[in-house]
Length: 505
Ligand code: NAD
Image (spheres, rainbow, N blue to C red):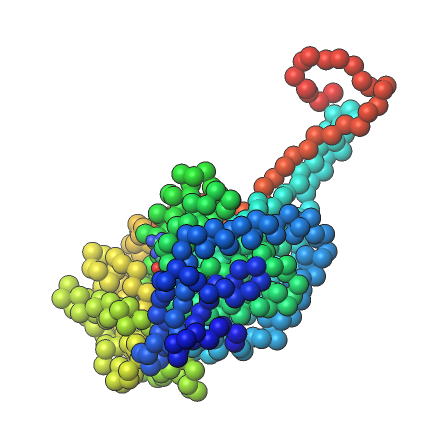
């Protein structure tokens, strides 16, 4: 890939401004680790405020031309981008796996889910169709159009370095905006590969920009008067503070935060299916997914057989480097994060839970990378740290509930409301759960209910700050502002002076 080679022997990850790699002059940088080996593999520039200003200036300059570009031409660029991402599917996934640590097949899945958003945005001529009311009054027509906002920014997390930016930029650019991405500093390289593909697809320079960095770059993007809207995905404390800062400045903002997704298993559930789902959704991507299942709520007698089935499946999971053939679960993103996650196992023991499977004993922990094996904690109760906090690692907690009502209460009392799932064979119970539960995305016998690109993605409560969910129809709404036009063409036969308030006649 074409990240620039620096004077030091490791890779140097730059910004992408005005269609070119731009090395930072801020003197600040971050270290990018190889989570599979524990070694530093790249340095990423951290933008100064002045460098962010330069990026915004370039985007602002490019915006009017792109805004005036016909819809069919914008759609053509997106079709080309779709083809290029498809052609480079494995290349993108390999860059992700190398910096994030996830397995290649998982990274391939991430790119595929991101691609759906580009496919959705290819339909932008239809998506931007407004409404038209002929003869709202005599000789008067009323219609609504949606127009782009201008320069918009996206600040994204480490766990989906391709998919989450695509959630944002596909619609933002299709709607006619200039988009600035501030990727996670933990796995930044793939953002530059995306920038190159955009350029090859014909997206004009300045319409897709990357500024690398930390809170300094993010903070300046939020505060810059020419940045009209901010999309954020990351942890809840940062989401809340970004939402508050942007809203105070009167900006449009959607800030998606963390999660604590519960999977409710009723006594009539298919135990094998529920165990497969809990293991896949609990340990896939080492639990570093905002839609990961982190709590299984086992109702009644289902608990013991379910736990036995989960343990059997855990014993077969192959933990290893994401790019090594046969690996099913990779390392965590950094050493500090791995230690923090492992710390929850020690706390769970001291707080009275039972460690049914201890990932600290997994043989992968002997390797030099940031590994922790899949862990299962039984007899977890509200109040324990592993129940209260978002762990964001391969630790699955089991809470035993006596009734559906008790289980539902746990879900609805939880401060997060990203996703939840129910496993049952009873259609009536599932429908009641869909009616009752306080979460934005619900699975019925489906553990990770990430909506398709033609719906929108978003949680409730502390999992989303703002009104509009991300991507899909709500994404188009977020990146455009409505304008309603009331129009009459001169007709001498109907013209008269009338000082009253205009009303339909
Ligand atoms: P994070 O909050 O640490 O970082 C996210 C982004 O914010 C990064 O680009 C980072 O550089 C930037 N950032 C960090 N601190 C900042 C600050 N003080 N001011 C401004 N910007 C700041 O999150 P992460 O560790 O990269 O990602 C994991 C988190 O993201 C988890 O909590 C996970 O649940 C959440 N997540 C949520 C969703 C969702 O759709 N709700 C999706 C993916 C990830």
